[in-house]
Length: 281
Image (cartoon, rainbow, N blue to C red; front, side, top):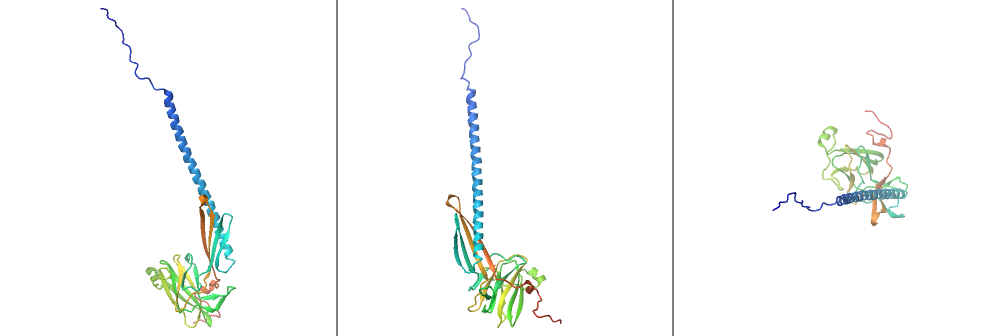
C-alpha cells in the first residue's frame, strides 16, 4: 500500500464582502445627514423670515394706530370712524371720558410724583371753564389702588377761588411719619382704596388735583348724591390699526390717549398761595 503525504486543501469559506458596498452605505448615510441639516437650516430661515414679516406688519399696524390718534385729536366731536388703508384699516373711537357718568376710571396709571385732574365743572366749545354747569353732588369719592398714597386738592369758587386739601396713605408705617389719613379699604370704581371728599355747600366746585406718592397708581372717581354726574374729563381716543398678514391673518395694534383740559399753572398747587396778598400773624 502506498501512503500519500501532504497538506489537505483548505476550505474556501464564505466569500468576502465587497469594500465598495460599505463605501456606498457610508456615502448614503452622509447624504441623508446633509439633507437633514439642510432642511433644518431652511426651516430656521423660513421661521426668521416669518418673524421679520410679522414684525414689519406689527410696526405698520402701530403706525396706522398712531395716525388714527393724530387724526382724531383734531376733532372734538365724539363717535366712531374708520380709515381705509391699502392693506388694512384703522378704527378710531372718540368719546368724552366721564361725561354724564356716575363713575369713571382714567386710562393707564398716574406715575409717582405726577397728578391727574378730576373735573367737576363743564367746558365750552373753546375749552374754557363754564361755571354755569358744575357737579351737583355734595361728595366725591376718589378711588385708587393699594400701595400708593394720594394728596387731593379741591379747587372751588366761593366768591373768591379757594382750595381744600386732604392726604391719604394706606401704609400705617408711612402714616406714622407723614401724618396722612388712612383711606377706606372698601374701594370704588373697581379700585381698592377710597377717599370720601365732602364739598363745601353753596360753592361752585371746579376740579380736584390727585397727586400720587411712593408708587404709580390707577385712579378713578365716583359721584355721590341724587342726580350727581361728572362733566367731561377730556377726549379719550382709542385707535386700532389692522394690517393683513400671512395666511389671511390680521396683525392688530391698539393705542389709547386721553387729551385732557388745560389745568392752572402749577403755582396754584403750592401749599401757600394768595391772589391778593398775604398777611403776617
